[in-house]
Image: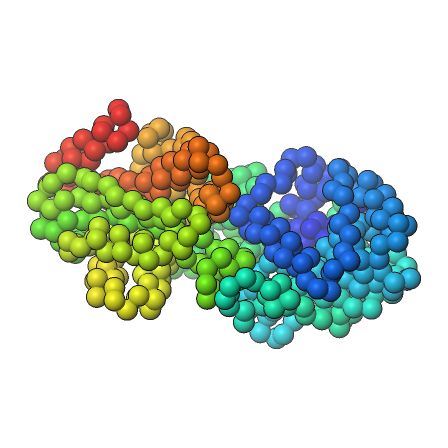
Length: 522
């Protein structure tokens, strides 16, 4: 059980009391894991600490537990240091480890570091909920501990900064005075703290309730057990408020939706009927029309996927914080007239700007006209638009590439095909195992290196620091991962051909099997 309430736990409470209760009483069941955003946050912290105002900053040694952190803070302060990083404070049952504090007698200035440059504030001008909770919790705790909090600053990347040469930390880091917001919000935080502690005293976790974070919650599989199978937690196109309203009406399952004659939109109706009948929904006419629009086999058919990097600290000239750029692609090409399936790829070295080389190779690989299947139009078209703006001499071939892109995901997002195994989602990592269950060749978790987009970002960022042998190992893992993304598109497209009883599906399948045997050595 946690000894103290922290800002992170309070955020959990505000998001979902059920999750908060479990984390408070069973923290060992929720191990922390680094992701790319976490690693970038640490890089930004280093940049902040290089600012001129922190020239005399003393870094408190990493503590294995809260009590050690408190002791280290006292020792650092007693040694004469007044500007401290990672200082620990306690007041009653509240605990915080603050990013940076400056202590002068009983006066203290608090610096909270956040690595995002956008969506820091609401349209009203107030901090977003999580950030406001973080700074006000610490403000409240420090007052409880007997300090006079003179200022509270939120340190974040300057959204107007563009990189030109070496980065000057004092130009890159913005310091926003949020003291007034902390003062205004303190009473609300005090109420939240009281409610959170009351929650911890319950004999069992509070009854679940729907919230915005349900989709990725580690408790989702158990949280709705009492609702029964096929429950409304998986209902598509319904926000958490709507699901909460349904639950309050006694509507817990898909069967309840029908028996209560709940209002459903057409896509929800498709989902509910498909789930309850355990029968896939297939709009053969719509899928056939989609396939005909690809103009295959008269033209080749391509399958494309990008991997990107979104570094907090811009590593390319002219870039701002958290600006996305492509670093890698995988491309499968099914030759026209039922020719063989081929593959090409690109991966930057992690050191030099990869964009020009990537764009040139992509134009070369796609010089033969043909439709280009992608999965989720939110990614590849935008990156091509960036290239068109950046490289006027490549505008013509890039514009053709952009025009020829077709989003395979739309078949699933429009519910032209739906099956129970999809639940409320239709990412390729959901669709693929539903179409090909227990296929080791298509198992992302069996990949030796990168297994998802976040892994690929971390691995690309690491390339610049690795020794040659390890770099080749990491590169190989990244290439395998991106290859699987486009081969997954190939396999999903093939499955759809069979589902609509395309007369050439078997012929195309033999081409893909030949490629599979050669590439995967099976």
